[in-house]
Image (tube, rainbow, N blue to C red; front, side, top):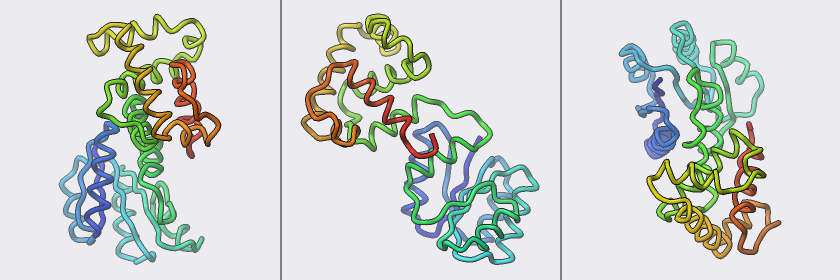
Length: 228
């Protein structure tokens, strides 16, 4: 699977490509001109295209129809709220239309939910934690993401005691269960001081959390996102 991001503001295109790559979807960006998009599409290998538009230009709609006929999913960011414009893009073959401005994180999640290949959960959690203010460079970051993945896939595990979860996480990172437990405590303390935990829980939790409280807060907030 590979995504093409067509945008004349190179900063947005690069940011989207970087985020999607971090979430496990190979991506690249190009200029938003029809000739460049058509050339890229003709080279093959793309499962999806993200493009941005102000109006339903006939040539652009034709390009979308061509992409759709080749089995390529088209996501269109529209700089207008007019229902007629949205309907034109959907009728041409766009899989999904979203109104700009649209947050990068929401766009990435939306693409992952609708693209053919099933999304991997762990990269999604890692991106979510970063955007929530948890520093990736802290030792407990990857451990927290892994623990949350385990608990989301099997929620009953969190109430059966944390030792098994710590041990499985430790195996993934070639460390010990005790080290995982310590790293999560340290990350929880950092999140309480930085305010990340408060923001994550809509200010319902401001004190240093236990590891179980931290994990539950992240899992709950992850599933309270739009499009979840």
